Image (cartoon, rainbow, N blue to C red; front, side, top):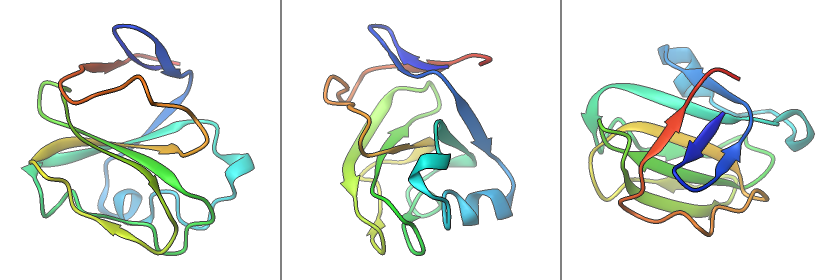
Length: 117
């Protein structure tokens, strides 16, 4: 479960920790098969390592960039397939969520948390 202090964002999540998991992300997946948020855990906070591409993606996504304390430092809504995005601040965690899930209530400075599904 991924949530902020106000609301559950999604009930399921998975982690992308290894190089291959982070490289592939949600590439080649169909929207109907993605009922979860994908959480990237970077080795250390960075802007360069946090660059996200949507090459070979089949649907748009929202990106939520978090610092080491899981506070939102940047949000990119509705990133379309075959795009690139570099966060404005260093990030330790990146959350990818299908763009048809509303995150309009989230803002910079909000703190996110996750727990077992």
